[in-house]
Length: 274
Image (tube, rainbow, N blue to C red; front, side, top):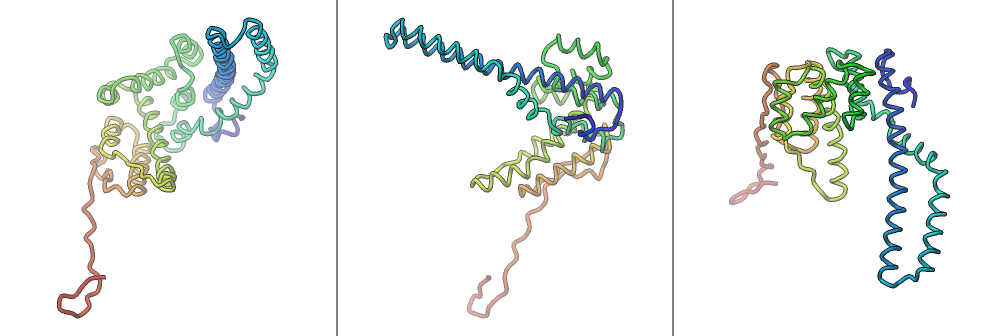
């Protein structure tokens, strides 16, 4: 995928974030393929060791099978690059930048730093990577990333308190964009569940409580979040809706049940409804 294919607007910082994410994902894809190959090899070695220990394999048969296993491993190594490239292509799609695109299109303050942070959110797994990112992009980008990851690592209660009182506007915007994308996927998931004879339940009250700490940070994203939430409740026939008529304090409201209408009456001793 090229930067021009993402839908992101041209900006040096955003393009650099894209390039870094591409390189990072390519390296991660190769690590994953190598790990899968190594795990498979070790699993088969363990099976051979167990078979020999239980007397199912003689030492000669064990050595023969081990040699073949080693040959198989060496034969597969040249394919690592090809398989890793396929894995990279599957991982590094336009969906990878969905939250950044959501911010770009709808945020009131879609700064390059905010977009870069959204792009790089999956490129930090440990303190070493955090330092690399900070040296290359600065605190304006890595700060929000650290905040989002911190919010996702604590309990929902502590996360809500942290987001409401301590998190930056950039971190909140990234969180809102991710919640919007998650909500937008639910109607399709509900239809799939229905086709399988299942029913997807939506914990409206719980989700609303998760949304409240993020509210009031960005009017554009707030409106998108309300729309996504209410479309989910429509799709899942939930009675709950977010009422944002008071922009400062949205409410979760429950609509009254629709009264059942009687059908036309037919003359008789008691009559009946159809």
